Image (cartoon, rainbow, N blue to C red; front, top):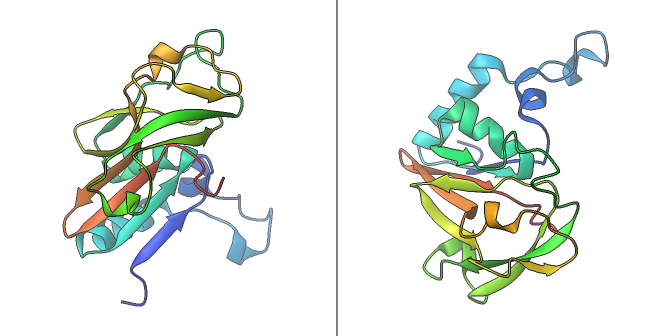
Length: 168
């Protein structure tokens, strides 16, 4: 009842799930969310809360919270797809409240970020061609037209996946 949104910074899903080992830090900084935490997050979203996952943390939402999305870059070797930190072109859904005030097409910062296939609301999609705006990109065809930002309904709430670091 105190919060309407919870934001997860860019970190690996296993770090969210398991956290730091007991004894490695003071007790209040060890452990992860575990099963109880995942259940509490599902309940929070179902009751109308918003969960926001940035970049790699979005894998937790897919694996543990059931967001129906597939990271098309999972398991793809660097020789087939590589984006070390580049600006990539996306098209935004103008009807989403997440894009209010933004132009229909923008460049986003991508640094080893996921890209998804999903039936959920795709708020930002990589351009169908000419994805690279600036920098270096190998394997453009793997992400062309795929989702870079998802707004998944969860009960009365939302689980939002940013396949980027929006603070950039």
